[in-house]
Length: 359
Image (cartoon, rainbow, N blue to C red; front, side, top):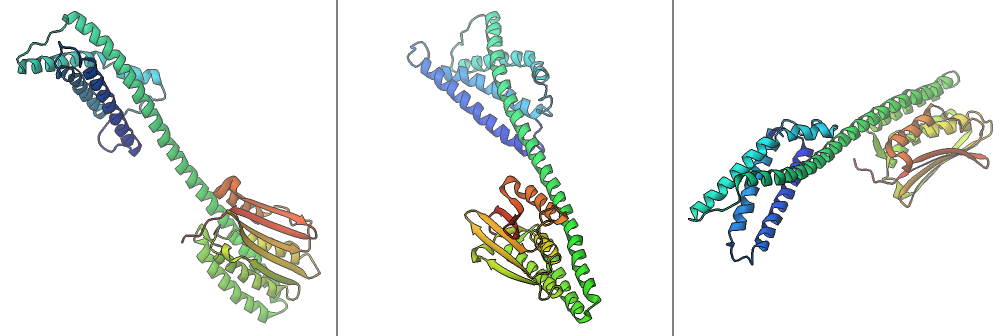
C-alpha cells in the first residue's frame, strides 16, 4: 500500500496488522526458546537467531509489500483474483527468504566463531518452501479479512454520509414547502380583513412582519428549542385571534421542564394552522384550542387540541404530511405524529426523543 495519502481506515488497519504480527513473532520466539531450554546441545542464543532471522526477513517483506502495493483493496470483491495477484510473488519471496535467513544465520555463527550446521540444501529449500507457503497463506487470509473489513467500514461511512446529505436535502425541501404554505395562509387572513376592517388588517400586517422576522431566524436552523418554537406559535395565534375575534380562545399548558427541549424548527406551526383551519374556520360556535407540552420520561410530548369540525381534520394535507416526513427522516420509529378525534375534540399529538437544545 502506498505510504502517502492512505485512507484513515486503512492506516488504522495497518497498525492493527503490525500489532498482531509483532505478537505472533514474540510468541514464536518464546516457544522456540522454551522448547530448547533443556536441550544441552543448543545454546541459549541459538533459538533467538533462528526465529529472529525469520522474523527479520519476513517483516521486511511485509513492510515492502504494504508500501509497494498501490492498492491492497483492489480485487477484494474477487477473492481468487486477489490471492492470485499476491501468489505471483511467492517464488521470489520464497527464494529471497531462504537465502536471506540462512545468510544471516551463517553470518551470526561465523561472528561467534561457530559453524551453523543444517540439512542439505535440497531438503532445506523443499522444507522451507512448504513452511513459508503455509505461513504466507495464513497471513494473506488475515490481511484479506482486515482489508475487507476496512473497505466495508469505509463504504458504510460513505453510505451514511450520502444518506445524511440526502436526508438534509429532503428536510430543506420540506421546510421550503412549509414556508410558502404558512405565508399564504397568513396573507389570506389579512386579505379577508382588508374588506371589513383596514385598521385591524394594518395591525395584522405588523404582527405578520414580527412573525416572519422570528420565523426566518428560527428556520435558519434545523433544530430549535421548544421555547423559541412556542414564541412563533404565540405570534401566529395572535394574528388568528385578531381575525376570529370572539370565536376562538387559546390556552397554553406548558411544563417548565420542557421549554429547553430540542425540536425541529417550524414543526408545530402546521399543526396549529390545522386547528384554526378545520376547527375555527368551519365552526360557527366558539372554539377552544389548547396547546400542551410536557416531558414524559425520555420523550417530549406536545399536543394541540381543538373543538369544532372533525370530519376533515385528520386528513393529511401538506402541513401534516411534511411534519410526518420530517420526523421520520430525523428520528425514524422513535418519533410519531398522530391526529385523531377524541370525544368532541381533534388532537394532534407529537412525541419525539427528549434532548436538551444546544445552540
